[in-house]
Image 1 (cartoon, helix red, strand yellow):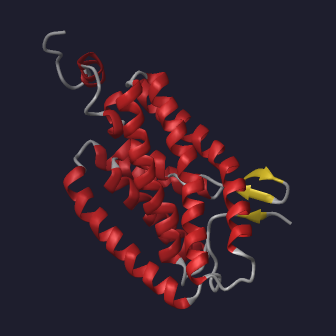
Image 2 (cartoon, rainbow, N blue to C red; image 1 turned 90 degrees about the vertical axis):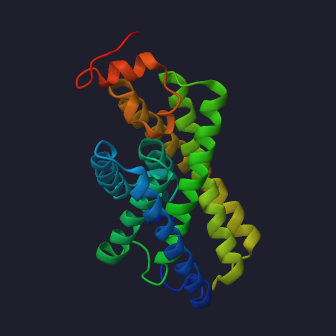
Length: 239
């Protein structure tokens, strides 16, 4: 039998903790809606839809990471790098909501918990890790891919730690928190490597063709890249 990680089922975290998580998730989504409304334009809005569909499809595919354990793409880092922190968090949250309501992937009572762990936490951590790295190492394609890999990798064990915190507060199981922490972080570092690779390859592919569509570096691109990527629709003025 293979165990799939990350989606919390019903009853694993008690009702009061799940309810509080639900309220926090609603507040987080409301903030993201407001931010995405200001952030998205006619160029980035279609990309946001494509990113959500891509993450949805990738989350349905599980890859083995250890004996009896498998993982899947979370997509938080990938989403925020491509379409920004607000739209990215919103896209992943919508994917998790749809999976929970239509595909029973994660419990209904745990939707708030899953949105926090896989949508909001990964988005916040992925955004700050990626932005911090590109400020230090630069925005060439290989460097952007390195930053994307690290951001994707880091988000997964941090998401797992968010679950451990929720388990410590309201877990219904009898397994000690220390044991849960060791098991979750260990496995999710391995899953994080897969997350980082998928994130880096996807961001690298977009950057190769249209670097201006990578939101995470749009304000740090050299002028020559902006001119090149927009040359189809906008005449280049100067060099």
